[in-house]
Length: 316
Length: 220
Image (cartoon, rainbow over all chains, first blue to last red; front, side, top):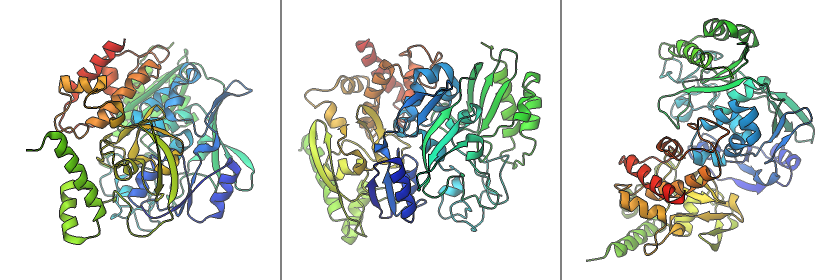
């Protein structure tokens, strides 16, 4: 690791202001992704702001019947929360399908949203990568692309977002709450939180410099039957090739978002209108703009079959 | 001839000496090759001096004070700072689970957290679970069921297994739990899923599951 200085933040606003003040500062919470990347010198912060002491570790009911999940709630605790298990089962299922028990015990809600891609070319510092070194090119295009995006990518980057949790948050219409360095707060719908790569794949979210996530809010429960179906190369502890987060209502209508196929959780309300007609018309719309490679074109039929399997489940 | 325990001590002394002489060229390089430190991340940050930071936490019930380069992971603080070599460095990237310790009652990868982040924390390593004279039931079960071959992943496996049974007891669900709102079962499928963050390259998995199952049965 490159040398860095370290401080423990005293309040969310102070953490944000400290991050804006110091060049190359990063927040550290669970650290499970950041330290991995720092050891490889893919991330080289000059200063770390430890936000673990900020008390943002509670799951609380909101006035409109939803839940407010503190930024520091660990993945294990969120998945095991009785209200989440009962009313937002897609979120529990998504969390439990990701990483390992050890990692989930440290990884946080906010950190999970901010984790970086596992594209092998992003991780290999000998290879060109526009996300890691803007302007250096994309080795994944024309390279080993089996795991990478089939939709939403660009000529600069076809990396996928690796999170399972974020896919469930997207299907639940979660909202991200933040505080900016001057103390102002804002809320960002999860749909707008992650950016598509375009010409600037190094910019992955709409967060501004120093802006700190304080919570993720879930609206009141959507009802229906919740599913998170993850297809991967081994039964546990692997990233998704394709994942389907879905909420299916008794009448066959519902919501669906995909993981493992795009640079952000992939959902379109337009495609969802086709839910009661089956997986094929949904995927025809949801993956309409897909530009898969020879190596990952299998993801298109795989996504359709994964949704078909979900839709074949009993509706509660 | 040395007893196994004396050999153990010598091996640890050699490893400590390797770190101490890491800058001394060929001799250190040979010793280093025997202890195979991962090339990409030095076990003890060397070179450019960063200001050190003080941190105090409890390890296996004993208060410990350390003055560390902020880059020091909890794993390196335990092994190199406190000479508790039971916790192992495998991949150093949270993929293998050899470094699993129990922090404030939860199993974690000690390689993916900084020691300075744990002011006031309570850490239990394999050395704190049991002793050669008085094994923890999980240690005894691993011995009985031959839950290892080379033994390198074993401290992490055992720390993880102890925490897994507590997680099931606490009702924390897993990916294979059929009903999220019911108490998780103690069957092999649950144990295998929950132990998936601990890799055993010798492939002792079925014996590991038997060992954990036996301890679980005794608890129930």
